Image 1 (cartoon, protein in one colour):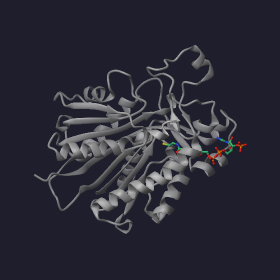
Image 2: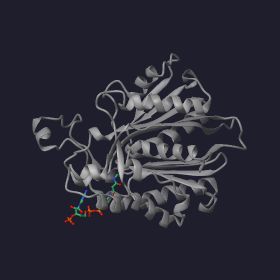
Image 3: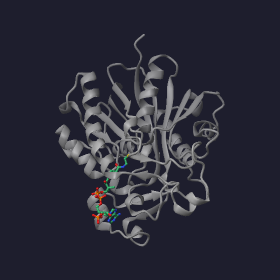
Length: 332
Ligand SMILES: CC(C)(COP(=O)(O)OP(=O)(O)OC[C@H]1O[C@@H](n2cnc3c(N)ncnc32)[C@H](O)[C@@H]1OP(=O)(O)O)[C@@H](O)C(=O)NCCC(=O)NCCS
């Protein structure tokens, strides 16, 4: 049987606290002009450390919204894929924490994936495959990150880029093969770029010790220039792969929802693909890079404000540390 899949509903949660570039001027040697010009970011959201806004908390609120949009109850979900590199705990995984917070009693499959900024696209594409093989009917895909915990707030080269937030979607079996459906998917990775963006301290190889804490070497590290170069090339390549798979061209695409890492990466990719910026969803100015959450937050906002409508051809395109990358082409 040829099973189609579609996105049935979306939801987001954004932490209440706003940290502006002007606030950052007080923390490191930087300026609002420098940050905005080089990245397109004006402000980002920061989770409360007091509770209520940890990754699974944000996911609970966003999921309830997505379930409502999909007209489903929590127990209708038969798989949870939770994408995050900043989970609540090392154990248990965040997907099972979320399952419990949603009051689910159906003992469904629930697992985390750690593929950094490609996390949501990985999750959607995996959900598509699980549904097509009959292993699931309704998959809750979550991207939820509290990167503020992993950023060195004294390092101006990195702290200006990131923010916290959550976005999610219910991917389900589509009963109308003429209408909404996921048309093509692509995922990949390239370990040769593993040193471009990493956080080697704190894992099994090197547990955190006092020296790391003193030197702040346990936080995320990034070679910004290297990431920039591979990002543009990879985003353009992934887009072309899914379009070819679906037998469509860029002219057929109504909206591109790219990973929001830097406005210059987004603009360069659009130029490489010859796609006008009017078709590209951008919200990096408000939230910075929220890793696995950027694509679902941008997608949800564009649906909510009426830009993306049912029937539109939409392209998700993401890359991240690893390196990991992927794209999804769908008729929303
Ligand atoms: C990080 C990034 C914004 C840096 O922009 P850039 O234009 O490459 O800037 P550079 O690193 O060359 O730095 C230029 C100068 O600005 C300085 N600088 C760096 N951060 C600064 C800041 N926050 N404020 C002011 N000056 C800063 C540098 O020290 C450097 O000064 P120097 O020329 O005296 O050495 C950019 O490389 C980037 O966005 N890369 C991709 C990041 C990414 O995608 N990451 C996540 C992927 S999932």
